[in-house]
Amino acid sequence: MSISISCSKRRGLSEEMDVVADTGDEMMKWFGRAAVLLFFCCMAAMGAVRGEAAALTGSVFYQAVPDGETLPAEEDWKPDEDLSAPVQSGGRWLWLSIPIADKFPDENTLFFSTEGQAVRIWMDGALIYSDGVMGPVRPFGHGYRWHRVVLPAFNGTSRLLVQLYADHPYELGRLGDFSLASEETQMMRVFTEDIPYAASLPVCVLMIAVMSMYYFNQLAWKRLNIHLILLLLVLIVWMVSLSQVRQLLLDWPVFWRELSLFLLFLIPVTADMVLYEIVELDLKRRILQVVGAYSVLTALALLAEMLMLDGFHYGQKLLYLLLLPGQAVVLDCLLVSIGRGNVYARFAMLPMVGVSALALFDGLNQTLHLFPWQTRLLPLGVYTFISFVVCMLRAQLLRERRMQEQEVALTYKIAQAVEWSEIDALTGCRNRAAFDTFLREAARRGNERTFSLIMMDIDHFKDVNDTYGHDMGDKVLIRFAELVRGHLDHRFRFFRWGGEEFILYCPDRDLHQAVQLAEDLCRKIGRAEILPARPVTVSMGVAFWHGADDPWTALFRRADEALYRAKRAGRNRVAAEGGSPE
Image (cartoon, rainbow, N blue to C red; front, side):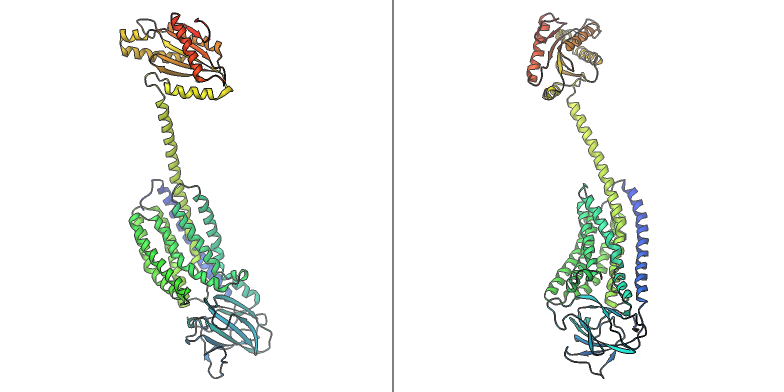
């Protein structure tokens, strides 16, 4: 058999963004070329499958009738030059007469698609195929679907009689992708129509996964990520609703048609909201006005569709008319933002131009039937998003890394400030407030380690101030503290309690070891030339911590009492808790 058809037809970003911008420019060029190459590959693949269709043995004729009960009259047939275009009869019922011949027996499978139409096919007086109700279906009509009809065997020539009912006169008689070929070729046609969707869906899913993981770990630009994820989700559902394969899984032609038309209105809304998040504050209002216009049109189309006024059909035409001026306004905003140094706007330029161009191309093809396929090429626009997403994530990672570095530096400064607040400015020892905190913590640790305290008091320090002046007294305190610290390692903690009184924390020292250390310090200080005019001596009291049941206040009191005994015994000596001065 063979058959043929004769037809005639923001603000600028941080310094790190310069590196990101250079990377983004290269990626945008690379992905732009890849998207163009994929576009032409898809067109070539769809064209190659269609080239396998067989040829007609004669002309196709049509005849409009007033209702489904009226049979076609032999003398009223008119030539139908293009089956992919609707018949302008003003009615809803139509008959087609299609001649066929048995030149190629293997090519016995008829394939075509309908939108908003019910169809019946007769061959040699016998009904061989029927789909849909031959009459009104409320509220949304018959939807979009493709048909695959295996013709019965016959000899010589025959004729197909096709009866059509259309929900609307502008859909009547339009049979898309009408061809007769082998069953394998026709099934391949189903999958070939889905090439743009199959090539774009994994990319969308991958980008959503990346953006979702980043969304929960980032510090900024959450709204931008949400809008981008929403746009990708809309594109995914829209592509599924348009795909041919979905009819093999869920044969809901009305649902998929209504869903695809509704989502078509949402695509420019969600896409421009991504750009809204990118540009500067004074440009946001202009983009929001464009988004508002799209949203109003979407709401009106949906309302008209619910009232059975075919709102999506007429609204779609208005949408394509609105896209050109609307996206021109958005493009102008992006150019202004790029001129201000907004790198995000530069990244968004390629997706914005690519998606807008493909959307306008699809609109022209759907309206003017420039090409025989029904597939939309807009899904290929997701490839232009890859460079935008990658560069956006890199820019945000650089920004957040810089913020984390600033946070670490700030934390260090705070810790340093806290430490400085605990340091005695004159001697460099830790001060009384630091001692209170430290000793509480040391006692709280329980039996983790033993320790002792040595309380020191410089003898006759008031006489030093009165005789030599406070400046010399300060020098004595400084030299005394340096001398004690020079005798200790990093495990010890030296505090200035106040005035000429100091406290030494001695870790892992029992009472006897702490007394030995105190005596060594007492002798060393007595021999040192801290004050050239006279020797400087010190009295010390030693107390040992007896464990978790020994409050730090009791420990401190025992050390203070021991110091008092050492001073009463004549100074320049060491006294231990519970004992006599040595």
